[in-house]
Length: 207
Image (cartoon, rainbow, N blue to C red; front, side, top):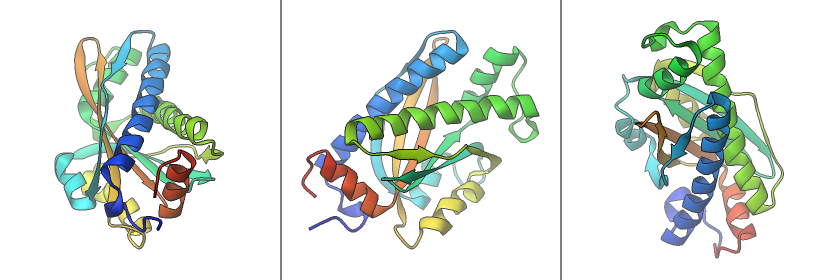
């Protein structure tokens, strides 16, 4: 019997998703390293199933100001990916490009916004390529949309759009290491449940 919601995922399912996340993270670290012209490493990400409230609490609470990048995925897998960039990550990236002091997340200029959006594009492509190559699926991604706001407002988008499907998300918690600094990287993956079961089935996982 196919799983009907995220809370039916068992440890084997989570391990498979963790491995996909690990491959995607490695790809992302390599691509970002090339973009920045310096070494970037990525820790093995932790993958968990969280409801929206717990995900928001984990990320610092609903009033925490973050940059949220939303990428829609279509094709053999439907859903969305949301990257949450907090100030330390944004600052580390922007200092490499522009060599200026810490930025105000609520006052990004066009150049800063473009740089962050490109990071989102690289990360989305890295994760989607991992899903596509390993799962043998054709997947398309949209251009990332960037919003800087309180976390509660940003998370309301997937909560409203996918709330009828599930009140939970696949939460990927990882860490980039850049200039000997550990910087948190968080991704929220929300595939439609039929897409998720299809992906797991293609990988030979009993669902």
